[in-house]
Image 1 (cartoon, one colour):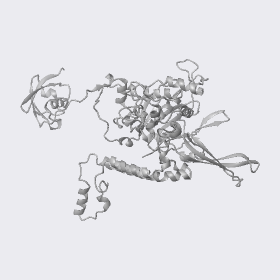
Image 2 (image 1 turned 30 degrees about the vertical axis):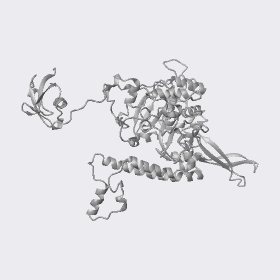
Image 3 (image 1 turned 45 degrees about the horizontal axis):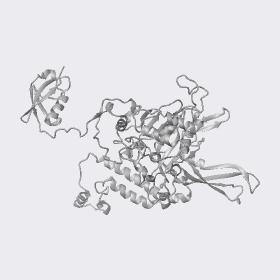
Image 4 (image 1 turned 120 degrees about the vertical axis):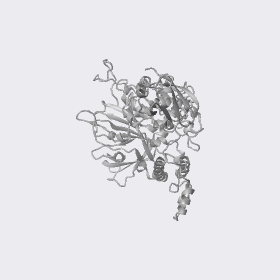
Amino acid sequence: MAPISVNIKHAGKTHDVQLDTTLPPAVFKEAVYNVTGVPVDRMKVMVKGGILKDDSNWAKIGPKAGQTFMVIGTAGELPKAPQKPIVFLEDMADEDLAAALERPVGLLNLGNTCYMNSTVQALRAIPELQVALGVPSPNSSSSSSAPNISGTLPKPLRDLYANLSRTSDAVNPASFLHVLRQVNPQFAERDRSGKGAIGGMGGGYAQQDAEECYSQVLNSVRDVEVPDSLIHPGAIGGTGGQKKRFIEQYMMGEIRRELSSPESPDEAPTVTIEKIMKIECNINSQTNYMHSGIMSALTSVISKTSPTLGREAQYTQTSRITRLPSYLNVHMVRFAWKADVQKKAKIMRKVKFPTTYDAVDLTSPELREKLLPASRRLQEIEKERAERRKVRKRTKNAPAAGGPSTVVQDSITAGEDVTMASAEPGNEAGGALEDEEIYRAREKTELEALVDPDLRADVGASTTGLYELVAIITHKGAAADSGHYMAFVKKSVFHGPPPTLYTGPAANDAGTTNTESAPTRTADPNAMEADDASATTSATITPPTGIDQSKQPSSDPYASEDDEDWYKFDDDKVSVFPKEKLSTLDGGGEDSSAYVLLYRSKEM
């Protein structure tokens, strides 16, 4: 039935409104609100038989064209039109659509390329790498202003990350894959079994090890320099000095290995210093936790010829880290060579890994002494922040209460003792919390005073030794040369604040440097609910719902800290992975098991 035109009389004025009797009365009330300004909850529409209710039957009321209805109620402010027009998804350009949906996209599998796809997605958890590569803003038309980076692989990697931030469709990584195979011919190995064939054609490419790909990609971009925008004032290797390499500064640590023999106590220990890009977690029949596996790998027994004894002797090699990088790679050694079958087999044992890792126990005594003051205080501060978040959540919808002075005065009136702490402005026990920015500024000043000067001057070094897990590469299957790799990246990586930048040319070039353009930033970090966990990439979402372009970002700059969920990257399929399911990646079978873990240093 077609809508009919009726009249609405309110405050001496008559308005023409369309009435569709096939729709519920609530829709009609909304139309009345649009012309009268009377809120629906304060509105009374007089109809035949009394007042129009939400469950009234239009058939019994029998409205007719031209009929006049009386409306009673105090008008409020009329709804305003949006400052900017509402744009529908189907009318948006790819760049605008990607920014509106704010969901990362996946990579197409080109035939046994899940090892590469998972590597690329895991490395997106390092926004500083995108700054160093010069990934342009999603709103930029070209990358002509990007820094001149050397090497064969960095430029294709930069272009791939730029494409991932500018589209809502899964990206084809063919160009990057082609260069990767040129730089590392091992990834061009053919699958002799024919399992890697595409579309029934033979000669497909073989499955590869994701950890080897991860390491080779990092090695291939080792010549990329640390841009001036990432170098804080007073740091070693700052502007004008000798340029530092990004991988060496941000992802490589130093380890001291001491080799001594208990059979020859008079023999002087042999000490060597090495650069490392990863630490290994050995897995044996007694390994239940990642930390114990790492400690086991740092102490080993080997046999070698003793120059003092003139024979084979047992030597104990003890290793301790003397420099911790901002990003710590942990390799879960899940594949071991089995001589009986002449192939690498997977170690199925379940090994628990932490989401927050204290690496101070892995360090040398000298480095531990430098890290401990800031490390211990940061742990206390994080507990205080968690308590403040709980208080703010509890009082979010509560009416505004009196300030600290009111609370103190009430206590005095009641005859209670008042401590000095309760009278301090902003003290949680004495009244309302101060603005979070005030606490953060105070904490930053306190931590800066505790950071060792040598660590502060070392660009890309961890100053606390505390790490949070931000990315995982998993393997599903029973053998290294088969199975399936996936990546898991923490949501806050994409929706949290961009990295701190200082002066320098990269400040205007990299995609993570501009607050309005960074692929690691979003307007609403809680926009995706957990029940979307089974959803695929945003390329499959085509609802005709509109996006209000005037919507402002969340007023809470620390909202991402509450979001502990993850994104699951299964090639071109991207979904939300709840934090409660993270323990399912511990291993214990042929299902997905953590293989490479990327930890980011917690700083001020």
